[in-house]
Image (cartoon, rainbow, N blue to C red; front, side):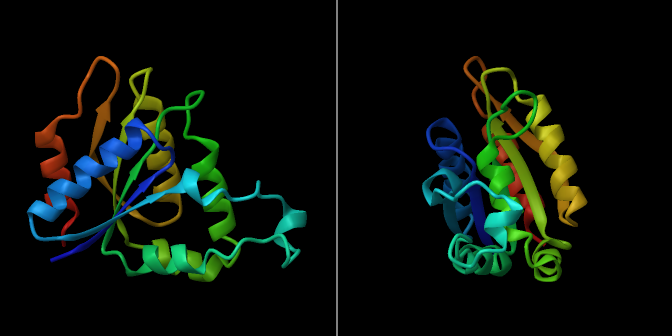
Length: 165
């Protein structure tokens, strides 16, 4: 049994996609949790804020959940050919302690998915590059869905199976 963390960068359709992944994993006997980054309401990362303990958010609980998870499924819509600011901002804040951030990410199995109006290929490429850069093991298969294309249940099933080690 694996512990999955579904991380969604926005509420709405990407959260619904996270629920589909979560339900599939639970049906296979895995533990799951969904984290909606838009609900965390982080301040915009700046170097000045990062050096001020009163302005820097406490992300220890999120970091612990990410560390404890056996695998992540990251779901985000395409924003201007990349991923949304909520995801970039969370990564920036979590990376302040670079050594523990690298330890959290290195070798972590990661699956990527999107529900996007424009198809989502660019957000998948951007996330693949980002998560590979921080040391995660991003699986090859990804889930693309949108207004005119439902998420493929077989893809979700194969991704959950592919993330279990």
